[in-house]
Image (cartoon, rainbow, N blue to C red; front, side):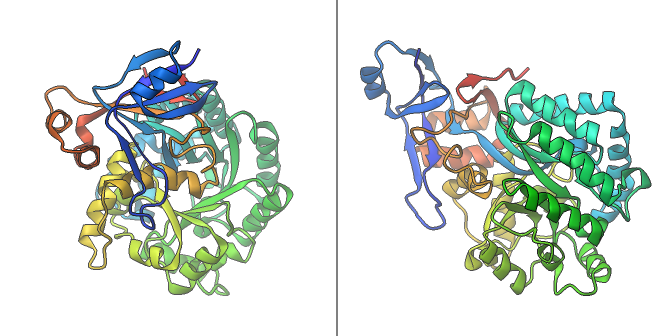
Length: 430
């Protein structure tokens, strides 16, 4: 039977950086779900007329949005959040990598994987590009936990062979064999996809990057994800490790790792040649504003990315980031741009786009998810204001849905994700 969700609906049909009228907002709206797909988006009265036998669920107390798309988040790092006072490399050494080394324990890995999936869902994330574990078993646990709840997950086993803890190092031969097994087992299984994932050039030798190249050549539909230009000390170290490289991006590009299915996290300190190459390759950047601020990496040069035509979308970057909420990340992106002298003035449509459709585009999934157009997967989020909150006041008195959307991002801590649908099936959030 068809299902009608009745209530205010907002989404971006196009990129608002290029199309000012990209936001579609329906205050008396309705979404019709049939067989896991969106069958109708429009006024409720018309939905009732077209689907007289459909079951109706009342969502008028909140707001219906597309499922949120997180383009950069670390599965092993949920319990690292809140480690204050560090910069990137000492944060890794003293707080993050000791916990990641413990994921050789498969029992702990399964516990963390289930915890991680529950937190994604409770924050309205329905699709995520995930840094897995350095351990094959723990990465398999991540895929298994995603399959249990039905989340759309792209992930891979992290590979490094230097300058981390010895427990996290691999060899090129072992990395190839273990990743090959994970690809054969999980890539293309339901909503699961595999991403080749060297941690960053600092911890990946040329031999490891050659393994990544081989896997991508053997499986052209895999994704590639890593870090780039996050922190000045990191950039200097990478330059010393790869004396032949023209810049940080070159350490990946030389091995054929920069392409349309590549998502590189941060890019806070890019050079002109790197931006030109990213645009040419149609690679995307995961913009992680709360992590950039919390670890003190810097403010994302959004205007430069826009001027060069480099695609970017939001990432929570848990656990350098300060939580799983992409609504909060949107607000942090707004704040960061207000602080940069060349910052971009962002509005509610930009923030919603960066949390939804931009992520789908970065992952090549814009024909399936990211907006609420008819025919797309019914990945949906329903949010309500907390009772008695200032956000609830805005829900009662906002002059327009666009104004309400701005309040939602600004007062994100007063919003709660009440319901989530994954291809039309409501997910259990408890």
